[in-house]
Image (cartoon, rainbow, N blue to C red):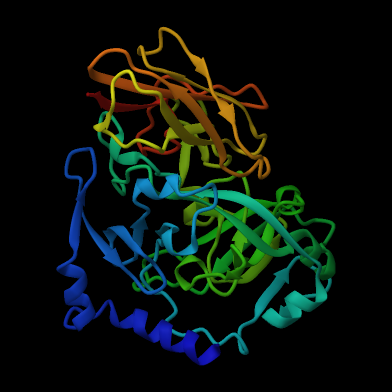
Length: 395
């Protein structure tokens, strides 16, 4: 296994060499047009992945084509989106030499191999959505800066690992510990670029759902999704899910690194100039059975299907409207894989007249959070969650 992993990583490194054969193949790839201005993207296949939508190559940012979300509730590893902030990815990871270092305000600093992590701590599994904070940013009106993504920068997987709380307990937290920071093996190429380091409060770090994951959907983490270890923070946006995790530092103060203090911040209240770090995901729902401009037969019963999720309370109900919000029809919810997972919804309907229609989807959470009809604008294009409106043709 290990030699194959090393070979894979070296193969990945060659994709960034402009003169490489594979680099030319990527440039010659097919394209897809996303439904907003300047939405033409290459459709490319990286090692370990099926064909995904490429936003950038350095660092790699790959979006899942939306039709993949109709395959099931769990997103296959090879279809899962990819988001990096730094171009200095590790090109070789030897799992025998890999260490997770736990240091800072602890009584017993740890240096754990992957094997030790697996043998010394009880394992847990959780099904949870990982979603980029800028998922759907390309639809922002007015347009905003940042990666112009459609709605494919999300995925739902079964993550297996150990509880972060158990590792911190073994390290022994100092009585003054207040925050925990997380760093991975990826590095900036230029000295002026800040390293990608994120942080949680000690209280959050000790929540039972927060994992140090080494498996995804029953397999080792794919390289492009954080091999061999990543932080999993269910209910929170993917910016906290640090990949290739190798350093944990316990602090006695609030972490003020660039990616917390300056980047990934949202208004404290709509329209406010004061900001706070982005955190918990907001409620969202989608129609997945029919893409924009799909054709539906008139006077024929049609099964609609989709997904919904929130920041971890679970989905209470999903409703659809085919008359631009004048009336709403309750759908049937599918299997419950846990409060942090996608929840399937289905509904059968019949359209009696030909022409164009919009199918609106709106979810409500167990905490009574209801999707707004329109996304509350912010200049970073974060946490889009307005009611999605899919245009279909009744023929």
